[in-house]
Amino acid sequence: MTNKLKIINDPVHGFIKIPSEIVFDVIEHPYFQRLRRISQTGLLNLIFPGATHTRFHHALGAMHLMFTALETLKLKGVEISKEEEKSALLAILLHDIGHGPFSHALENMLMDDWHHEKLTLLLMEKMNTEFKGELSIAIQMFKGKYPRKFFNQLISSQLDVDRLDYLKRDSFYTGVSEGNVNTQRIISMMNVRNDELVIDAKGIYSIENFLTARLFMYWQVYYHKTSALAEHLLVKILQRAKTLASQGKDLPASENLKYFLNKNHFENATPEDISRFTELDDNDVIQAMKIWAKNEDFMLSYFCQCVMQRNFPKTIFSAKPFEPAFIQEKIDKTNERFGITNGEDFVYEISRSLLPYNREVQPIYLLQKNGDTVTLENSENQILSSFINQLNTKYILSFPREIS
Image (cartoon, rainbow, N blue to C red; front, side, top):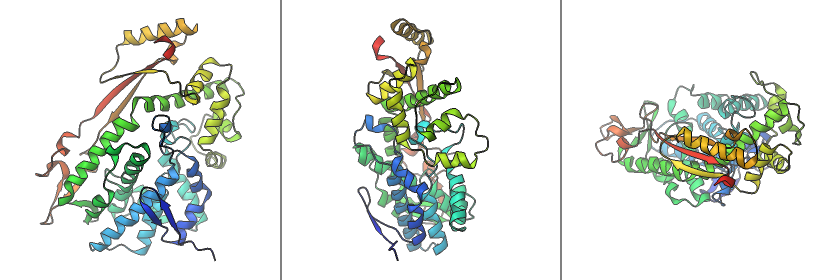
C-alpha cells in the first residue's frame, strides 16, 4: 500500500505533516493539483522577482497552521473530536480551490460574478460526492454553518490561519520583512470561549503587530502602484479579448480559455463550465498574451506588450481623486500620440482601499484572566488598535508612457 502519511518540506514553516489518508487523497486530486499552476500573488513577481509561489504552497501552509492551532487548543482543554480535526484541515486545505488564473486579478472576469468562494464551494461539493460524504462537515465549517463557530473563525475571520500563512509566506518570497509575523506566538495565544475564538489577553501586542504587518504588506506589496497597474492590465486584456470575441473575431487561445472568451452568461454553471474552469490556469493566459501581443487590434496588442515586455504605462500616486481636467489632458495627448479616438481606454484611474481592522464585523476578542472578554480596541493595554480601524483609500492614475 502507498504510504500516505508523508512529510512535505516547506521553506516557510519547515516540515509539514500530512496527518491522515483523506488529506493525502484530497491533495492528490486534480482540482487541488491545479493550484500548482495558479500564482499566489498574480503578477507580483514583475515587481518582486522572488514572488513566484503558488496557491498550492499557500494551501499546504494554511493547513499546517490549522493543525498547529488545533493542537494548541486541545492542550488548553478545548475538546475537538478526530472528525472535527479532519474536517477543519480539509476545509482550510480547500479554501482557495476555486481561484482561477492569476487569482484575484481575473476574478469575475471569466465567469461573470462567480467569486472564487462561490466556485470553491461548488468544487468542494463535487469532491464530497467523489469522497462519499467525507467533506460534509468541512463544507459546513467553510460556510460558517457548523455549530462551533471557532472552526469557521480559524478558516475565515480577521485573525485566521489563511491570513497568518499568506502574510508570512508573501513576506518571505517578496523579501519585504514588514510582513514577517510571528505565527507561532499568535497561535500559542489562541483560545476558545463559548465556542468562539479568542486571544489570551497577554497576546495583545502580537495581534497588534499582526494587524500593522498586514497594513504595511497591503500598501507596500499588494497595493503597490505597479502591482495594482499590472492587475488592472490583466483585466483590460481579458475585457478587450471578450469584446473582440463577441464581435466574431477569432482570437488564438487554448481551447478552454477560448470557451470562456466566447461565453457570457453563467447564471447557473453547467457541468461543462466547471470542467473547463478546473483545467484553466495561469499558463493559458500567459500563452494567449504572448500571441495577442502581435494581434492586429491595437488596444489588445498594446496591453499585452506592456505585460509581456514589462513595459508598463506611467503611474502617478495620490491620496485623493485626480481632477477630471487633468485626466482629460492625458486622454487628449494619448489620442494625438497614437492617432486614435478612444484614449479613455488607455488613461484610467485605479483606486485601492484598505480597512486594517474592522471592529464592526467579527471583532477580535481578548480573554482576560478573570474569564471576561473585551474587544481588542477597548482593551486598556492596546496601543494601535483604536487608530487602525479607519478606511484608507489611495488613487493611481495610469497613462501611456509615450506621452510622458
